[in-house]
Image (cartoon, rainbow, N blue to C red):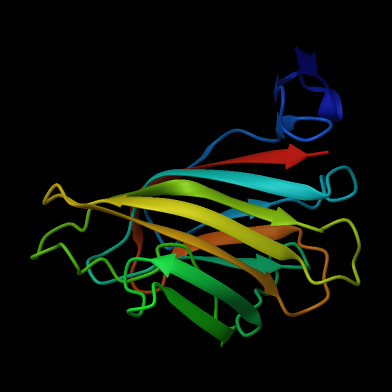
Length: 193
């Protein structure tokens, strides 16, 4: 089944929510860049949630994969008001890390040093959902799951949920490393009606 947002046929993924997921734009690809910026301004009035699929996201050794959000189309990026709970790589003995007032959503959960002994840290894949984005006076919610495949063959994962503690309507998302460039990576964005 195809639907037509903005006049272009797009593939609809059936069975997700009441209206399904709609691919909003071509996949963004990174090759040794500081960030992948996804501009959503023309979609924020049509979709209340966004679903990002990340694949082969490679950060430098000892770096985190992060996401930042913007309410002004990417002119400025929110760098102070993220709160979330993370479970997975690099967390405490209880299995969870609670973070308030963070500078970004830490999608990889921990620096990729646990299983690496130099060289490239491997790849990160997974998804990020942003919900409650249909009302400008609400705190947008974030949910993510990522898995990390290291060149040593080890695998780990991160699950997180939280919110942006600033009332805003998100219309841009930046995927970046907390240090250095993204060596590679792909991000595909879907709208959820």
